[in-house]
Image 1: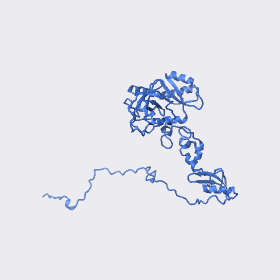
Image 2: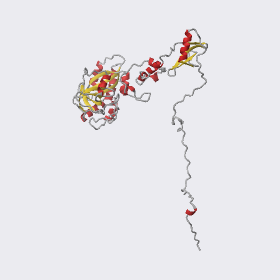
Image 3: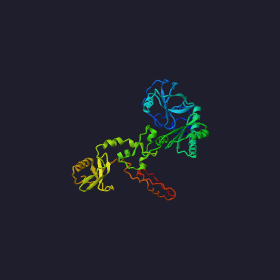
Image 4: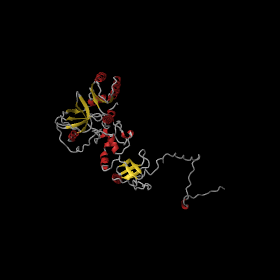
Length: 398
């Protein structure tokens, strides 16, 4: 990690100019983690020392500072802010009235919160020292992991973030139980010659800090826009009729995917009037046991064998409720459903031009071109019209 361009990738912005003194980011549409779209940026607003600024540090860590010097700050600029102790270097991520909306989102009361100050725009000396601090983070993390193993502490150091002036570092760790790391702090302070701050995070927060690509092909929600983590239980998967496959339901953090909560309300509303799946239906053909449910098609599938899901019979929800009502009256129905399974219904799906071609059309080996016989090139014959042909005069020797 020799250049600021490499280091800034962990800060989430690959567009920062490495030669300038805190020059704004070239892409202000939001290239950082947990970015906020500033839809008021084209509206001019006055600058005063009461203005608040959202400053972003490594990965998903953000802070809110007061612009006491009334600096004209632009999102993407590198600035020096107050820290405890010393100063830190961060990137301006949001300015203007939308900062107050962010405070309400994170439930921060501006009247009671003690905002720290924005000192100045980052100078070249600040940037150089910040680069030196960033270069130490990876080695410090690996060394701290060896120290925790030596002290036999049941914890994992997931990330290290140095302060901009190299006087302090934050160690993010994961632990299942309470850890007594007083001895660990002494070792780290002697080893790295810095002030040490230990901060415990969960598995979801670690995945958000590190980032990655989900099974959907997009960036992880926890590292792009998701800020509050809601508990995800197996009941959520059960309500959506999902198979309990840990490899499919778990995210990169090892927990259940946060996106399982996105559509669960629609599924719960759709099956409000569904009968209980525990009810066994009585027919002349035998006892029918529920096997699966297609919620949005309003179809429940039953089988006469409780131990296996073979020979499934689709039954509409209305028919199931009718059979339950008749069974309660002591009436046994003749059959479950009148749906004829012999008639195959062809579903019309989406098809494009690329999908109509064979996927193996490029796998066949190309045939080699036939070699032409070696020799002098043969001049092609051109058939000219009679009037355009050259006249040839033959002279006989006497």
